[in-house]
Amino acid sequence: MPTISDLGYGTSREGVTVLLEDIKSNLITTVAENAADISKIEAACNENWVGHSKDVFLNNLRKDVTVLQDGLNQMYNALVTEINAASAAIMDFDQKLISEN
Amino acid sequence: MAISGGTYRVNSDLQQSFRTNMETQNATVNSVISSYTGSADNGGESFFSKTFGMASSLTYETVGITPEMLSKITTAIDEYVSNLNASLDAMPTAVDYTKAFKGEGVTKAVENFVTSVKEICQSYIISLQQTEQQIIDSVNSHYSASDADLSGQLNSDAANIHGNA
Image 1 (cartoon, each protein chain N blue to C red):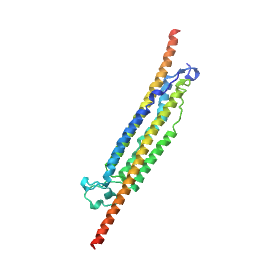
Image 2 (cartoon, chains in turn orange, purple):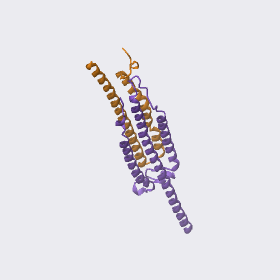
Image 3 (cartoon, rainbow over the protein chains, first blue to last red):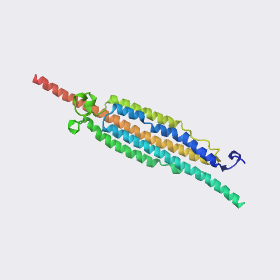
Image 4 (cartoon, rainbow over the protein chains, first blue to last red):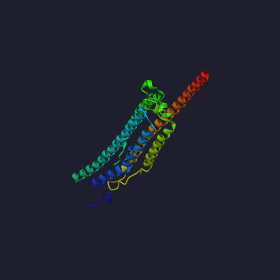
């Protein structure tokens, strides 16, 4: 059975799964983790800033981090959908060729 | 098969969300900053009670921040932004998709994806830096004004003492 590297055109279901995991780990995880780590800002604020304004600032910062992470997840999920759709379309096209022949 | 990658470009929505949070932030900071110069009459929130170490002589809780304290917070924010920027700079612009697809169809999709990730992160960073700058400006402005007010009052009191002597 040929591997995908032997083909001129095609897709591999297993390869797509690996690709999407690679994209997540290489392109999303580090950024998301760094964005989520506001511990030093929280510590600096709690040690040096007293009052309601500090709470408002930290609450808004946490909200923005959540918005950012939701956005990253939305983009990743959209990319997953798009790549899976492309892979499915190629497989469907291949199936039609088999059916026609 | 070409993949556009256009469906995950949700930046405008996110930017609006950051703006909304930012506007809330601005409004609240502006209103709360004014409490720094408040008195015991409005719940005891006093800028000076914290700034000038007068808390032990007061019966209410202290509220406030000084420019010196603020520098520690801005240092933490700057380090955070620096780390986030470093992770964005380290993002590869492409991934090896040769085991998933034969052909170059996903190249553009992944490029668009990386661009979009960087764009929304930059929007977030800019929003945070603008807020940081506004807090710095507000604190410095109120500190200077309050310091001048206090100096004026002390001069006035000193004149009274002198006058009573």
